[in-house]
Figure 1 (tube, protein in one colour):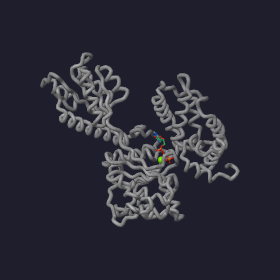
Figure 2: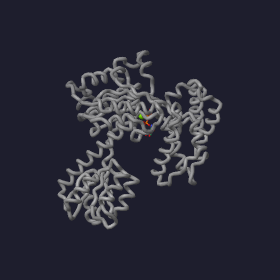
Figure 3: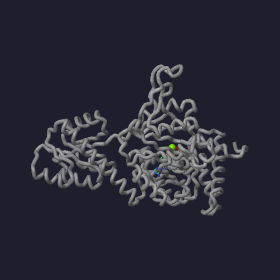
Figure 4: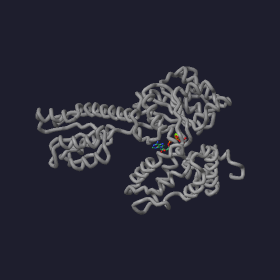
Length: 462
Ligand SMILES: Nc1ncnc2c1ncn2[C@@H]1O[C@H](COP(=O)(O)OP(=O)(O)OP(=O)(O)O)[C@@H](O)[C@H]1O
Ligand SMILES: [Mg+2]
């Protein structure tokens, strides 16, 4: 596991280029790739249409005159398949009535070939801006009016729909958000969605795992240090707060933050500035904070294990993520999503999810939540040999546990379910020869989470 802070940039925009003239396609692909776009070129309209249907880009730049079809007609078919995509049409023989028709039918612009590079770059930037705006509006619409997903976050359970609505309401605001939920419930995915739907979306999203660093290193990672701050500090180092300036800082596992650092963090949130290790001058920053935890911070605050003032600063908005076993209705949709994802990654055809498999999955208690389901489906797709997944493609201990789970009524008190999970964890731990890394991988949970759970097991189990 790589524990260093991560800056996860948004994916680069994707542009398709369609022209019968191979040189034009090659030149544009080369120039636009240099500008950081992901590009793909096509010399026939039909191939481009197929690819748009399969894998829609953000923008298509297309010559109107193609041998295998009328460019305007093709554009309409493409936009029906990918409504958020913009199209820039290019022509060797411009005509007023065609220009009018093109814009009426949805082209972003209609340009005469050869197009000056400056003009093209400006038009591309504007078209991509519009495409992004449409996508955002769509996401927000879906979040409010309810579908079974918000971008790539899947969920049709009422609790998830409520979360989608909250995301669309609070993402654009600059308030702190606290995400609370068990390991693997999607906290980081939601943090990312909050950032992507905020005005900070083009600035860094920097994630920091508070549980992954020794106490004395945290300040250095977060705030950086001045040259000469300690032996070995040969130059000034920027901390994560400065790297994230203008963007979002995601403080993962905030419950693991040591108390002395909580005081420093509170200061940053209140004063919007901080002092580098070994420094004296405050450095001003503009960041939004999103924090996540799988612990109960309120209880920790009452027990004085977490500062109450910081807790209130962080939970201006609190989003509680339900465990997967509390939203079993989402399992089939999620399972199918992960099967598609894995099959695409492995270059295999997408196998069918049989009813048997879905029944087994619905009975299982998923201590590792969505991440565990993702790992299970990925493993199943890797093992699958026929056209559909078989029960044998599921890990054997799931089948074991689902048999045990059958004896528990669905409204069983949470303690019984917790016991069952603990048994499952203990069994996997024993089977791996008490290898924590392997156990965490199989369960789809982080090593920190595993370690925390193992601490709760009776001594004989580990
Ligand atoms: N609702 C969802 N729809 C689609 N994918 C999801 C969903 N929830 C989680 N995932 C996927 O499950 C995996 C785990 O999610 P994520 O890392 O966000 O969990 P987490 O709550 O941050 O876990 P941890 O506490 O262990 O850090 C990721 O691959 C994520 O993309
Ligand atoms: Mg996480």
